[in-house]
Every structure is written in C-alpha cells, then in structure tokens.
Length: 432
Image (cartoon, rainbow, N blue to C red; front, side, top):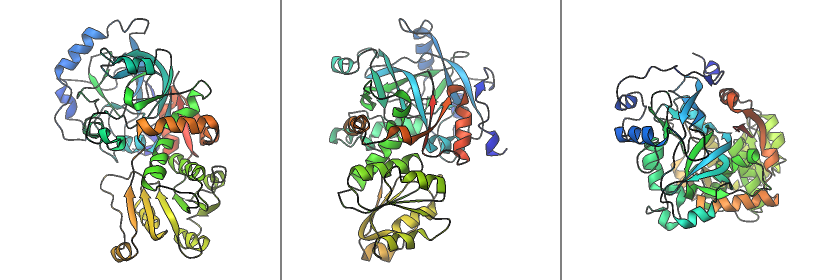
C-alpha cells in the first residue's frame, strides 16, 4: 500500500477493528515489547466514572485513532477522559501537525498502538483532577485558555527537581515508552467496548484531552488558539535547541538545515537572540523564500549547490558558530557537523527512523573541538511562558509560521500533505 493512501479520509468508522480478548491482547499488536501498563482495573474505573461525564460536560467525545502503523486514521467515539490529581481536562481547540506523529504513523518510530496522536495543543480548561492542589487550580481556573508542551514534566523526578524538564524520567518511562500518563494508565477508552487506547503526549487529536498541569501555561486572550498551538512543539523544540543546547549569543553565526515547522522556528529564535549571519538550508525554493520572513540572511538550496561549501564561503571560510539539523537524516547530520567552525556546536533536533546512524570524522571532531549536542525540546515550566510572551510581543511571528489549517475531519489529509512535502512551515488542525 502506498503511503499516499494511508492517510486518506480520516472518517468515523465505529467498527473498523475487531477487538477480542482482554486488554492484554492489545499489547500483542504494539510495536514496543513491554508488559501491558493498563491493568483491567483501569477499564473498571472508566465504566464507573465516565458514563455520565463530569458536571456540564458531554459524556463522549471524538478522537482520531492511529490503529497501527501504515493504516489510515479514523475518527472514533470515546468516553470523556477524566483527569486525576495534578492533571487538567482541556477542551481542545487546535492541534499542530508534526513530523513526529508522521514517524509513528509510518512505523519509523516505535510506539504503542492503537493510539491518539497530536502533541501541540491549545484549549480551554474545563475540569481539574480530584485532589489537585489549590495553587494549580488557582493558576488554571475553569475557562482559562492554555497552551500545552509536548514534554509534560512530572515535576518530581531527579531531572525535574533540577529544572531539566526536557529530560523528565516519567515522561520517557511512561508516555514515550508505554503510551500512558505517569500512573501507568491511559485516560482514553473507546465508547463502544471500553477498550484502552494509548496517548502520544496528551493525545491532542481529540475534542478533549488530559494534560499534567506542569505541561501547561496560560494563553492570553490576545493570542489566537490556532496559531498558538505551535508554541507547544515547533517553537518549544526550537527554543530548547537555541537557548539550552546551542546557547546562542548576540553576533553568533547560525545555520539551520531543514526549514520546516521546527527549522523555521529556529530562524526566528536565532534572530530574537541577536544572531548575525542566519543561514537557511533546504531543497525547497518556496521554503527558502519564506525563510527570509523568519530572519534568514542567506538561503542555500542544497539540491543546487554544496551546502557545506556555501556556508563556509558566506562565513569567510571558517564555518558557523552553530549549525542546527532539523530534519533527521544521516546526510544532513553530516552536513551539520561539517558546517561548524573550530570549537563550534552542531545541534541535532531532527528525529530519524529508528536505527538511523549519523557519521562524523573522528579526527576532525577531536582536533578541532567540535561539540555535537542532541536536543529534544524545551523546559515546559521555564520556557513555555517565555514563548507566550515572545509571541504576545510580536517578536515571534505566529501568523506567518502557520501556513495551512485543516478541519478535524481532515486530519488524515493533513498528514498526507505533510508526508508529500506540501506543507510550508506548520499546519494546524482546528478541532472545535
């Protein structure tokens, strides 16, 4: 089956998968080989707690389900998810369309299935989990607008206690490894048969989603839901790379390889931090033309000229202080490491197919003191409020960063377009 047919027509199919056996049979179809983190008590919890929904809320919702790799998304009915202590139920307004989701849909990155994808969201607070502390409730009152980060820190692990939310142990051990929140349980259950469905981050391609409060920040009324959704991943990832990994300083020269949603956000952050030469590298003239809006001082089409040689020509033969790889390909990994000056930093933020390997010349690395740094994202509690302020002040241009909008029912088409390379910058699915 061609990939173009896999995402066509996200639609309501109530019985597209025949479920059989207990919840443990679900794990047999997961790519990850781990024990089932969702005990049968979870299903009982939902059959008791969600039949009527919370006061003032509907009892059901719709969400886009990825049943397994290389199968179409379908829209299914779920019980309204219920938040637990320290968690907040969000009425989802918008969800960004990210390559990370596409990697999962194509089976390039292993993740539990079936699952609900979508991890950069905006929405409205509608419920607090039982036993949530008073300060959290006061910080996120019912009706407040919020934006969510895809890395949802637990706030308690050894990394979170040091402020390194981007390395949160529970996020990786539970959400990325098992598709659950941090009690080892999902919040998503199908209405038709009570079966659990896994969550990629908060599972944002849904009308409602549950988010740990540490992964949220208030969104002012002046910022729109749709454009602001990208703050939670595209901009969040770029800020983590430029602020924490690259540590961009005024006057630094920066090259960004791969000008999609994250790469174009890197350009804007580099400009905000006072970088001098800002070099955009891609194979799309359309993306490179738009890169100039985001702060690029130079543009290189790597299909038409040698990107490394051109970067060195622009920088007087030295290379850049910082090169950022935002695509996740072995070839661009190598370009990134070869583009930096002596003592420079090569920052890798593009996710690759599982097992992909990047090469680097060892002697050059050692003798010229090249630093190769990985960066997955920002630090939600510290950085997300800063990004909101950057957007509110106009320093970060949200309106030009979002190039396409899709209806909820068109989510499958959005990922097909992303897979074909038809989206410049970022696309967003408008849910409600």
